[in-house]
Image 1 (cartoon, one colour):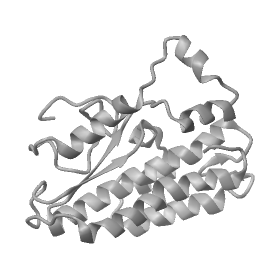
Image 2: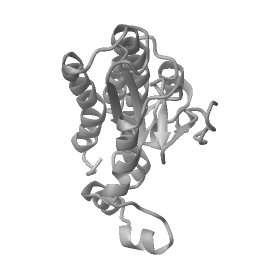
Image 3: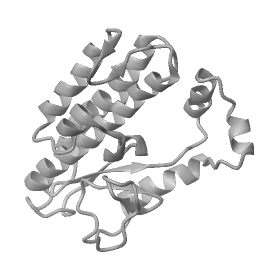
Image 4: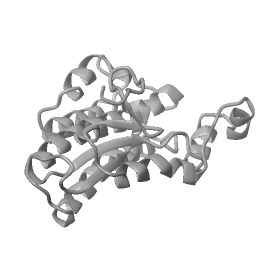
Length: 215
């Protein structure tokens, strides 16, 4: 995401999606195993995501595949398809391909989080059934990191001006709050895994609106 060259954009997919897949597969054998089929009896996996990965940001072909993926291979396939088809200048599934356009650069980040969300839901179904391990995802918010600063610069913006207009960002401790809470809070029936959280609240995948307890 931190550049205008296509190889920089591809790195976003390789890190956010395939990197998370590889680390998850490597960690599963090391995790606490619980009772098969009993969510919360085993360990927890918390993936860092973004509201860019919610259903509301998807459309057409992408939404059809990623909303209810049956297996991880289906998510891998559409991710590889995106990387292959965005080499061209135009594609009906993904829109106009202009590597110097900020909207298109953002699409790589968006797809990396959409595919991560789909994989999170598949992993959760599989790992709850096998080991009672839950897999969830959380949006930490707009955290003041080098990545955020560079993202603004790449798109010709100034982070400090963005903040001066009243737009809120977070320090590192505040950004870590919800992920740490989700990983360590006592388990309850709301934490079935496969869910999306922000600001210590469960978020509706379809609308992006926080859900009330029990919803």
